[in-house]
Amino acid sequence: MDEESQRIGAWRRLLADQLESLRRAGVEQMAVRQTAAPPAACPRDGNGTAAPPRANEPRANEPRANEPRANEPRANEPRANEPCSERGRERGAADDVGTAVVAALPDAGAGNVHRGETADGMGLGQSLDRLRREVESCARCPELVRNRTRTVFGVGTPRTRLCLLGEAPGADEDRIGEPFVGRAGELLNKMIAACTLRREDLYILNVLKCRPPDNRTPEPNEVENCRPYLERQLDILRPEFICCLGAVAAQSLLRTTTPVGKLRGVVHAWKEAKVIVTYHPAYLLRSPNQKRAAWDDLQLLMAQMGISVPHSQPG
Ligand code: URA
Image 1 (cartoon, rainbow, N blue to C red):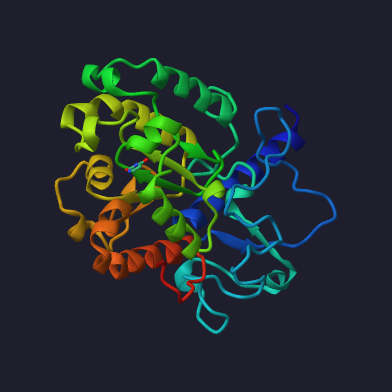
Image 2: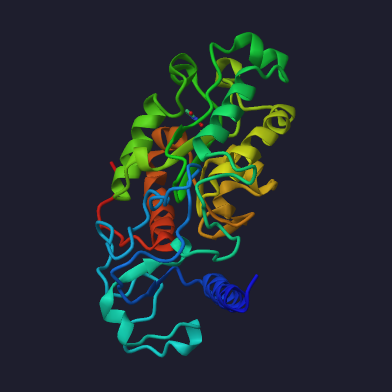
């Protein structure tokens, strides 16, 4: 390698380190100068082409719907007249030329930066398909295998910021093969819409991939049997946020026996993802008086995601 390449390499490593420490400090966006040419390197998808931004993520220089425009602070971001040194972020002249997502910058370190492929170099869709086929042939839980019509793997976009994690398929899901398509799914759709999100931009999955007979609560050994699939699925998706719907989802993911009521209102962590816990939509159908509390949870989620919070509550 010649001297020039070594110097460029050193600069890139330094930049990547700085970006990573900003990311760890909670900075999700930063101003950049617009240039006519694209950045020297972009995250690549499996085909070696520049990877598009993740769903729910603003394109460089383009604010999302209901997101502050360039120059406006995002939720959790210091306002213009706030000292920024505490946040490890410097505002400068470049602020008025647009925004770019740190996660979209090259070699920004590990974290939840998606390069559109898994460690083995496969595209995300391919990796998920391979895992889906494994799940389809799984026979670890004889009672579930005997009773299932089909496995219910998950649905949504692989390049998502947010995963919604439920408990297990019910009768409708077992028939159709997609999570949350029954009555609980209808309420979940309203909850998603109330957050100004779109179901197709998220990824929805369950702790169990098979329906427990008569919709009984999953047995601990069934949760353990299915856990490697769930973990691998999340490892492929690498969401920034996971919203656990109900006790089984929250307690299984976080490996705790703490009740949902006590897990709510706090941002937990699973690997690099932030985890928010709320009530299961099926529980909310039975206990509508808890919808207000669930709405508080969704507002916490939106604030964490930098989505400005609408006032209306889902019905
Ligand atoms: N309840 C769940 O937890 N998951 C589904 O997919 C449907 C209902």
